[in-house]
Length: 137
Length: 229
Image (tube, rainbow over all chains, first blue to last red; front, top):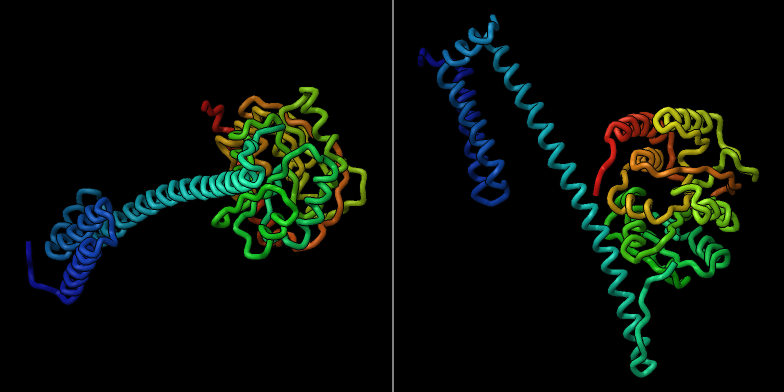
């Protein structure tokens, strides 16, 4: 279904191609984790397919009962973007939680280490006396 | 005693001296929440325990650091006190009493019922009463001042808070959470003083955010049900 190529189609194809290149470059430089690379390559390929085969989007639109085919693109894009943002919010929340736990753990460990060092120093001064533990009411 | 502190070098030494004088048998832990000023230094100079968080976690994350410490070290009771000098350490027995008698798991020293010269703005009083109403609806317990940071907690609360402590303006949510865990909260009147130095972190915009976020978070907290460890 490749009819005469319109200027917008050229822009869309170049855009999709550019997106794919950027994704591949990011993965190559290890700046994008593999789990996201698959997702984004999928997006790039989908864009490419829609740009090259103009009939594709019309068919999808007809299938969904949408009269104006470009609306189908917007609809799909919006659903996809909302889903993606929700996913990213989940990932960010999870990371923030882990980050919080790690920071607390570091603070408590540092406190523990300082206490031991102080205890050792005192024990050394007293000629091998026992270091005091930190428990109490 | 847990004292969360963020950029409180001005008021902290005085507060710590007062606390030590009022409760010489207690261990004091300052949780320095990634302060940019000399909070950690001035706290260490007074000889108390200091846990330095490497990054700023906000009051919830700092508070939980204290509870995690108490949980690991096996403390039976933990008290949280604000670093700004608002709370009078001589009132400690008032919030510790009901814990010792087993009348409550968590005791809040409330400024609403208080006697001493603390007056707040009309807007703030309105906000406080809205929050009280929400907490009353959700938990069935009538509380006048749900945001006070002067609290005493028994071992079961220490364990619950070590497991989970809400973040981002946690005071009210932390109460709803306890209620869901089946732990009793009690309020006793204490007097409040003006803060000693530094600045309150409350601005109008933050207050507005607070009034939207806290009720929603509290309702969600109430829907969560009991979390088993």
